[in-house]
Length: 498
Image (cartoon, rainbow, N blue to C red; front, side, top):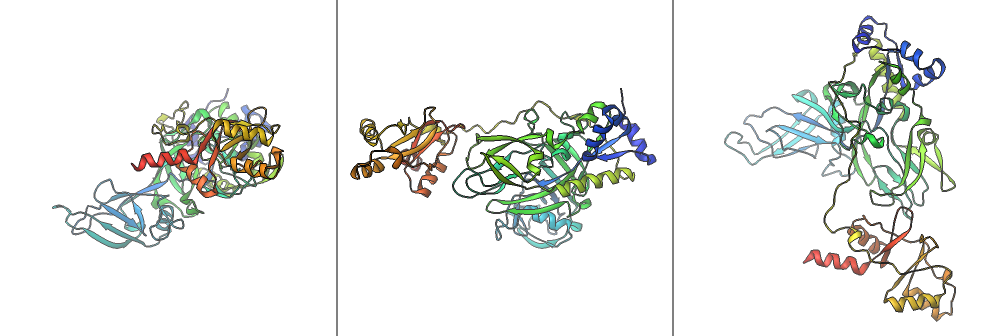
């Protein structure tokens, strides 16, 4: 049985005889030589990922002006920075957008501009105190002028992402990019077999204090990331590093159309091969990593799962969905992930980067919980039973149901209560006037729907947008639960106005 220590590997790095490979290279090595030989021969496996990390930002300290100011409102290149700290400390978040160039420029761009050496406009206002009398300041700064510039990202290095598509009849714009209507494209993110947390899913070597590649410089893991959910295969990391060491090649501001701004972050973690188990884990391939394709056209955390897919399939450029071949595009860069893993490999080989043992392991059992919404603002509180029929029934059968139940909407279902369409009193009236008896001739099959946990405000907007008066409420299997009407949403807004 092979066993190594951090001290032994660091001694090899110091002497220049350490053996380092990337995670992609490790796959072939284990396949050809086996786990025991790989564990014996390989000392470190390097990983890398480069994708949009919305939960990113930087703490900045500007130093004191003369006379001094206790900043209350702060803008950097017209992007508001958070000031809830000491007098001249701020945190600028990647997703905060410019007040003059929204959806084009934001906090992520400010961070990139800082490390690129560009001049940044600083504006601040204050209420003034005896010890901080200045109430307004306007100046320009560079990264060199700032005392501390600390990249501090509450959530980075997602283990994997759900892939996204859109079943609506119109294009939508999301944090997963532009999603065409009727499932005509799929987007995904993540480096697959190069991802750090896929290579050490049990956090044997990844923990608090682990030294990492971050933004082109050296950083550290300082805890589990927000939304850390390792039991579901969605682990995350909280990381920090010195912006003054970083390179704009590996930290890039970005804007997603009609969604907002973010920051692309380059992150790489070395995995010391301490035992055969780690050799096996770092040989994980894209064929071994699965995720789900979700319908982002459903604005709910209970989005329908359309199918399971491997990262090998996603990286191929197309997948089969609903019996059709659908193009797939990545939101993260595999090219940059490979470059990061290779750069980290070279740093270690050249004796410029030593490994650190975690001072504390991260949780392997935490589960991410959704927000508990206790107010009555979702469809769940306004749904009522749906009156249904099947396509086997006639127009006159449906007319009787409309009268019997005093309703204007009949939901058409199949034998298993799955949604097939909707018929309104107007449809039936027109059909009777024209002596149409076959229900299939008047049913609307392209139906806008809601789910129980959709915000009622969203459902109201959907009805207004499409000039309709009701939405069938369905579950993830398209089975009809009930119906929400324009009348019920109007009652909601009337209650809240009063």
